[in-house]
Length: 98
Image (tube, rainbow, N blue to C red; front, side, top):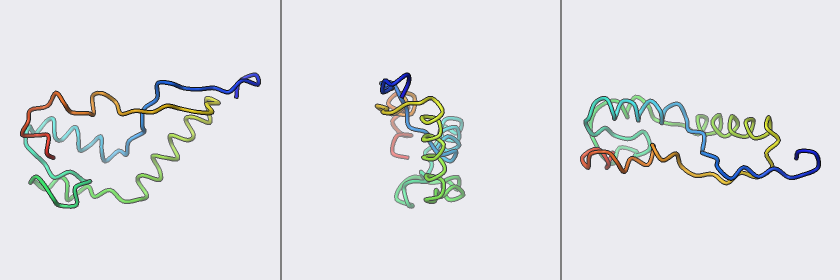
C-alpha cells in the first residue's frame, strides 16, 4: 500500500534457488546434457545434478526472500512469470531434456 493505494507489480519474476542458477551455468558451459536437480534421476547424465539435490528448505528460503522483496517495496499484488532467459527455448535441442 502506498499512500492508501494498493500497489500492483505487473512485471515480476520468480526468485529461483541458488541451485537452479548453478545448474543453468553448468549446463551452458558444459554444452552437455546434465541430470537436472529437479529430475529425481530420470534423465541426463553427469554427476553435477547428483551433487545438487534441491530440498524443501531451499525453496522456503527463496520464497521468503521473494516475500521480503515485495514487503520492502510495499507491493500488494504481483503478477509473476518466468525469466525469458530461463525458458531455454534458444538452447541446442540435445540440452533441453535436462
